[in-house]
Length: 225
Ligand SMILES: Nc1ncnc2c1ncn2[C@@H]1O[C@H](COP(=O)(O)OP(=O)(O)O)[C@@H](O)[C@H]1O
Ligand SMILES: Nc1ccn([C@H]2C[C@H](O)[C@@H](COP(=O)(O)OP(=O)(O)O)O2)c(=O)n1
Image (cartoon, rainbow, N blue to C red; front, top):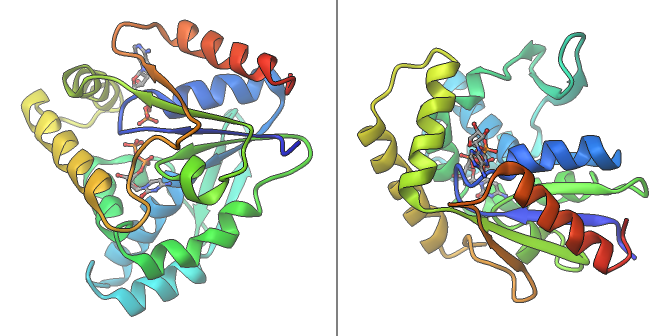
């Protein structure tokens, strides 16, 4: 059985957080697919490529010069893009918004497909994003669709950005989240939606531990752990 767990869902639903906890608990690899789209957006902004220049964006996605490295003092892999650690630079809302725009372009998505699939290993993989269960790993034995209300997600993101020193208003974040949901859910290619066989978890009133435990139960049920 393919040892892949997919976690899809909108921004701020907790995908990255539970993926990281589960990967530490199970010793499985992580694929943060959103980071790849953020890197394409970051590269475009860095090299002055317009966000609607499909050919140049697809070329950038195909040749993306990135390595995910384990750095001292950091338990997570950090993206080293064109030789520079860009972990915090790609996490800004500006980059998230630009990522959502380039992610709506079919040639960019196609260019990233093989790179994403190459993350699957016998050791096990937890892949988080928008289309992990629907497009990238359609035969994954456990697929999770993680959601939460837009208001709850905006509050989580606000606290997270504040803690990292970004000054933002909660109203602006809520608008941003709704715009990104709309773009990610209504694009014609690989829109954000639950796979037919996904387990849907609404985390609005659940703790991180409760979400982790529901996913662990689902993995046990199919004999993956
Ligand atoms: N169930 C939860 N309850 C409260 N806060 C949560 C929960 N899940 C995640 N968070 C917090 O919300 C923020 C966004 O989570 P994150 O994992 O980055 O979301 P995503 O990867 O889906 O965008 C983080 O600061 C995280 O600690
Ligand atoms: N598998 C994926 C992952 C991300 N994307 C796009 C859509 C998202 O708005 C952006 C950024 O994704 P990311 O997962 O980093 O965003 P959040 O951390 O959930 O805010 O990239 C995608 O289209 N497909």
